[in-house]
Length: 173
Image (cartoon, rainbow, N blue to C red; front, side):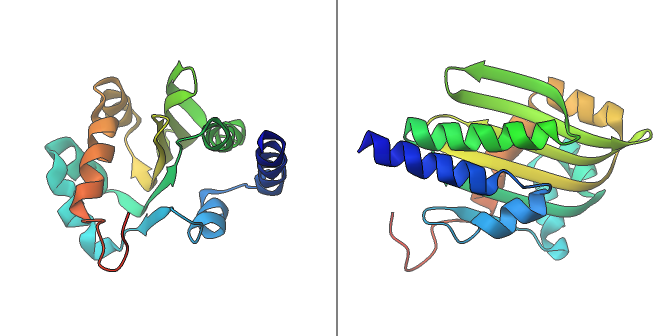
């Protein structure tokens, strides 16, 4: 059984190794079993901005906002998600915060263009679930640094999911 899981993860990681963008990753995994995938339409940005005043200013500069949550209850699942995040950060994302605890991870990474932050990727994995929260837009680097230092991105991730009431009819957990 362990060999089968290892082979499956190896094939999956090598198949996913060519991701250059969040868009490709999102498209490839949004239909996976037990995955929650949200691409927020612009008209809902104002609702999300109500999580905190800091996030209200952040969401105001957002052009694209996506969230994905994956099961991460096994070592293989955690390793897969951790490897995906490592692939993103090796492709022009700059890590501004990382906390590793065994297979648990908290990472905030961004892409800059000149003196503007263009993309922000927040990854959390607690060995039960792993999540990717992605912002695209034009953000003030100083504001992003402050939000990362004050753990506001983590608070936003936790407050984001209840905004969408993910207990949808017809899907029992």
